[in-house]
Amino acid sequence: MIHIKMNSRVAMKKEKIIILLSVMTDVIGFGIVIPILPFYVTEFGVSASTIALMFTAFSFFAFLSAPVLGAWSDRIGRRPGLF
View 1 (cartoon, rainbow, N blue to C red):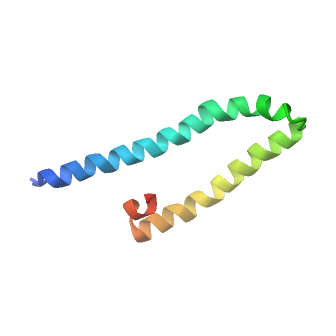
View 2 (tube, one colour):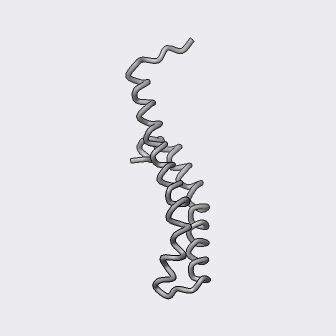
């Protein structure tokens, strides 16, 4: 049986809250901002292909950076990687 001190339980709970807030921010970005962005950008006279290029660039660089950031957080730790 593993014995966990109360302080480490509190620390684990804080870490989970930080991760939850990070994921929630990402979901809000996709769920609210991205669907509204084309309507907002067209107010500036930008074409639909430019908007598609913006979404493509964001997705492409998110795809490229995920493994790099994952390896970095494995090397230095999750907590320092978040801060």
